[in-house]
Image 1 (cartoon, rainbow, N blue to C red):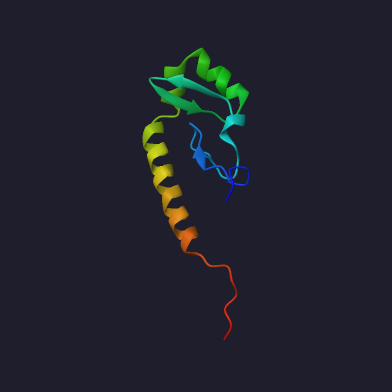
Image 2 (cartoon, rainbow, N blue to C red):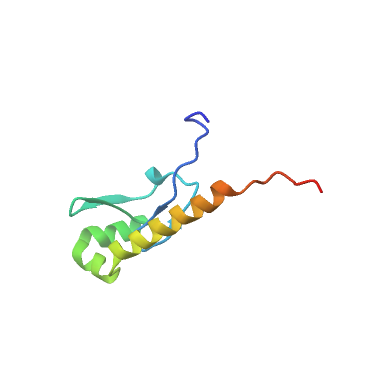
Length: 90
């Protein structure tokens, strides 16, 4: 598969929304405590930039949520990689 046709990897935003087959470069992001934080909207980015610690606290356990989402994505990718869509003949 060439780079032009390669699908972007799934990713989660700070609130835990998972995006698949979407390029994360089109989502707002900011650095916070050494991590690149992805957000869903520009409005969320504005609220985040106003007070990052409060915004993250509102989305408490965001690190745990991100780890859980990553594990879920990896599990689903494992399942999808074993899926064979070719019809079986009897």
